[in-house]
Length: 200
Length: 71
View 1 (spheres, each protein chain N blue to C red):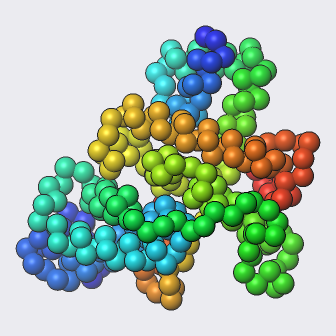
View 2: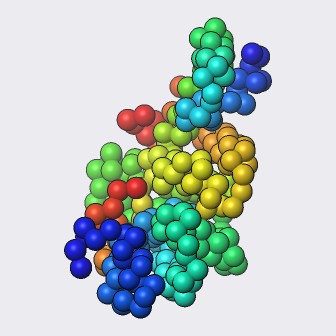
């Protein structure tokens, strides 16, 4: 099915039982959902499972979609609700030390690649273990998914002022953790484990 | 505007979400207060670090991946 078919037409066809339109709709949005859930969970396998659950839930609820928001916003709301309801235990917390950072195939990488991998590990670690879930969600929606405050409020079903407050607190907490870990991006007095992480 | 007030508005200031007059007040405070300037620089560094997080890859790397999507 050509990519040029407008989303509204696909939605209308899908609601009318057009299986091809339905497949196309979810094919387009699935990568976005996966990215969002991967960032929220910090775990590709969990994100994969939740993406599948979100697609199934959206498929079942498609008749309820009223086009009051974009299809992506509606899907994101479903995905985030699933994430919030997920009762699975988060991975065990480990202190941030060089020994605990696992870089896959470390021996095959240049120093720079290792540093970059360490940075990715640090970001994920701080998001998953040092930020309350409500702040994690709003930070990811704003700073990684690039959604507007209004879109975020729509997805989370909260006020704009709630989004502003949580975003501010979440960003401060996230930064505070890097400062606490003596990341060199914030101070020249200490040597950060990611060696300044470069390109900031 | 005092430091406490200015620092409480960093997030919205960064996102350009403040009304023009308030934005000007924060900007004015930042230009006059080196401590808050340093704080704001550090605040923005935190956001820049977060933005460096790359998306993960789905199991098997199938077409549920990230190819073709910018977010």
